[in-house]
Length: 325
Ligand code: UDP
Ligand code: MG
Image (cartoon, rainbow, N blue to C red; front, side, top):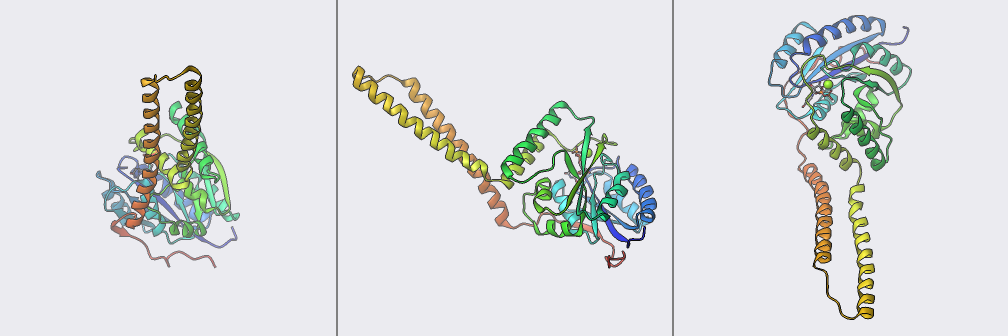
């Protein structure tokens, strides 16, 4: 290749990944040895440890001691993958960044293909799953609904069936660094920043070892987060509910008036009174809850706490790679 060399960080968020890491080291080493020559790229392999309690940290340290291109950032506790990725983004000093899972669900062998698209001028090369092997019907369906809802509410094009596996150009890294919101939803943020995007299809593998850190409760939270951080549409529910109930109340009042005038005085209706009271009470609580959700987010943001805290880090000199002229 005649083009100039570029520097690229491959960032791996890790949380209790002692079983997957040895496999990852092996495959990344093989890839880096080959691709740094073939693709004219100087690699940095960055591990962001998200407060693991198993043998993950010693493994990473041992690896970093013998591999000059390795870097690591150890967070002070488990902050969640979103914050771990943000820590990685903030520590990246290269021309590009690839985010990849530690469990080898995203095959590192696809990286050369991503680099090719990056060199062709794209700023955000994201991987889209062709198949979702090993995932239940329910997980597939819920993820599809979630994307649909988020897309409709947020009003920006959200990429379906994509994870965090992607190559980001410096432009995107700098843009993402500026979005230091306390409740992060990377998927939506990647869409929000824009820039020249291109997808490529891949088959997502099963986890190499260990078990997933997700459960439906966490996913539900992430989904609620995505919706409330990108859209104020739920707040409009209050307006609609209020409008509908007020209108129904006027209609019902007219009905009672006419009935009273035509049929004489009549005071029935413990049941109907109860129903209306409960219905309205429920609607009011729901709306209060929605407002509360947004209020909570404002509260968290105004505290201005850092997104994560670093316990220990090894970041190589940024001058090491050859910068793009
Ligand atoms: N992860 C993390 N912090 C967490 C949970 C997960 O850094 O609190 C990392 C994990 O080590 C892995 C990646 O995020 O590299 C994806 O996690 P996982 O495989 O559990 O999620 P899934 O692939 O099932 O979506
Ligand atoms: Mg996984």
